[in-house]
Amino acid sequence: MNYIFNVLWFEDNVGWYGLEKIQLESIVEEHCLKCNISRKRGSDFNVTELLHESFDLILMDYDLATEQSGEKIICDIREENVFTDILFYSSQYDAMIAAIKDISPPIDGVYYSNRKIEEFHEKLSGLIAKIVQRSENLINLRGFVLDNTSDFELRTKEILNICWQKFSEEQQSKLVDGVNDLLNKKCRWIKKQIEVAKKQDEIFVYSNNNDHLLSISDRLDLFQIILPILSSDFEMPKYICPTNFKEFYIESVNMYRNRLGHIKLGEKTIHIKGNDVAINRDFHRLLRKNIAAVEETIFKIEQYITQNI
Image (cartoon, rainbow, N blue to C red; front, top):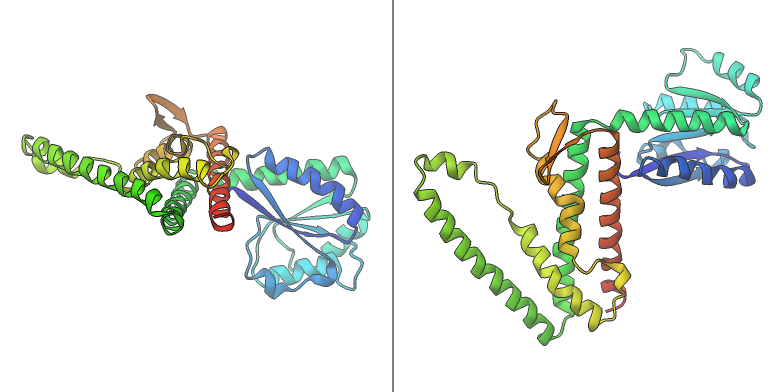
């Protein structure tokens, strides 16, 4: 699961869907996830399309206004080895249960609810909590953070490339100065590190275990050069991006990425800013919220420089 919770919803009643869609989005947002809903009518169902998409939850109305009934669609889905959790609901609860009981062998991963608002909300909330909790483990967390930060780093590089192509010679000169300054700093830093390493009693052990930031830190420094240019020369609104994007990026995701890259399986805490932080539900929610915020910021920058410059 990423920071987006994908739902496939089979519902023919437009009015009821519109009201309950708001409730579903609210429940998902409690877990610091963004809700993405694909609504289908019974007549829209095509099981082959489902094989090319990934959903975290399927909501299925029993009494669809079509020849395709809810339980028949569920059977088709399971026959294609799609095992996404399904909430099967209806105002005709007894008829729905009777229809599903006639199916042999029994269908796994299906939960049932009346269409009554309170019961539906309770079942929906409990099922979403179970699905999210199932994904909240260290392996998934590390993959989630590393995948997204790798994507952010590639997009940061591409934003710099686009700005370079669109900037005037005067604006480009500021980036050239910035790169020269970074390269000079790297030369001094490398020379100093070599001197320190050669003084160590165990030069191999020291060098092999010396952690340091590389290109993402440099590109974030270059970001701090292009942002004032985008703001003053190209009138990019200030709300699009924090003034100190580097600090925002590091505080939101990068420092967590660096720690998660070295944490061992089974560890229950992560050391952040001199403090041990518990790896629990709140920590998972924090990272989902932070990554969503960075994603939104980078997307807005990409959108602005490609559409307004």
